[in-house]
Amino acid sequence: MDDVPRILVVEDEYLIALELDTELRAAGYRVIGPVPDIDGALGVLKVEWPDAAILDVNLAGKWVTPVAETLRSMSVPFILASGYVAADLQAQPVLRDAVNVGKSWRSEFLLKSLRDALDGA
Image (cartoon, rainbow, N blue to C red):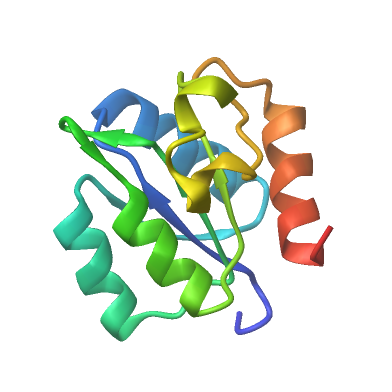
């Protein structure tokens, strides 16, 4: 089980978090979370070292930037699952170049983006 990639999911909308959890587990990943807020995610990162993460950009009105910065400092790749578009992310350097699969993602695109992130692509 140690070779199963661990994916941190940070999402505050319950149904979306549940959908991500279900899709990732079905694809063979181990899910950490889902975590609904920044403090919770930062707490998890003090005790867990995920292989990658999927982040919502807006968590109850707060940017996920502190979590993304922590992941970047840990060299943990992440992708976004957000309704925000590229222009919205320009003011957030840690987020602006991240792959964003959107909020109405296609499973194939989500899983390919995650595999690419895990492979360092």
